[in-house]
Amino acid sequence: MFDLSDHVALVTGGNGGLGLAMAKGLVKAGASVAIWGRNSEKNENALAALKDMGGDVEAFQCDVTDPEDIKATFDSTLKRFGKVDSCFANAGGSGSTAMLHQLSGSDWSSVVDLNLTSVVDTYKAVIPHFLERKSGGKLVVTSSAAALLGTPLHAGYSTTKAAVTGLTRALAVELGRAGIQANAILPGYIETEMSRETSQAFRDACKRRSCSGEFGTLEDMEGIAVYLASQKSNFMTGQTLVLDGGQTIHP
Ligand code: NDP
Image (cartoon, rainbow, N blue to C red; front, side, top):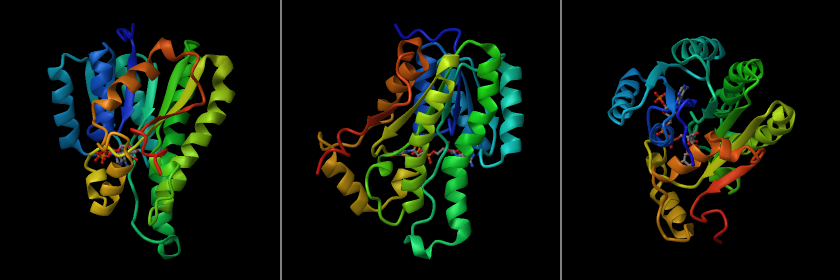
């Protein structure tokens, strides 16, 4: 049902955490996968893990806050795979921990650059390819429960993660007639390099609000990525799919 053979997926931030989990799901479903990340050692380790699973995979070193690097890396990705069918704009980070009025201009712009502008620049590289191929295409961004919850000391993170859901709706309408879908995944707390840096109090609150009393797992990201990459999600567009164990509905 979710056969992704002959499908090429691009996953930014695919060398660890949620991105690598999505890449694993996509490989399991038969997709060829390009992962992008900055850290070459992490890229190599992730590539080895994906190859062990039998995947047709490649890792590319790319800093998604640099639009020129994005363009060049997208060209290299096309050269390697010939096409891209789905793009998971997943690279991101929490930014500085401080009250808004204490954030410097560069603190603010760096979280916006990483979580919002990088998504725009990645999509700007991918969309012309989708339009040229006339075979549709899937745009998927990783938002966060922080988009819905009031997350103190991380206004930049909350703001950018909410912004990508607006971007998703705009692109769904803008590109729908071209057969292109845009969706967002909104995960709750899942343990990764990034989320482990949060405070114990924050982690306790996430666990308490989770309806099962547990965090999500990396495996939870696999199926949703496969669904959104597949043709089975062609009628799903402009949506933000909440994958949070109920963390955002539990008072
Ligand atoms: P990780 O820190 O484990 O992964 C972040 C990924 O992004 C890494 O692969 C990292 O690669 C990459 N990355 C960071 N900056 C850049 C950059 N400038 N250029 C290219 N790649 C970059 O965190 P998560 O897996 O937790 O986070 C992934 C996404 O999921 C983020 O967008 C995050 O906001 C979101 N999210 C995470 C949740 C969680 O609970 N974990 C919950 C909700 C959303 P490298 O180190 O090589 O640069």
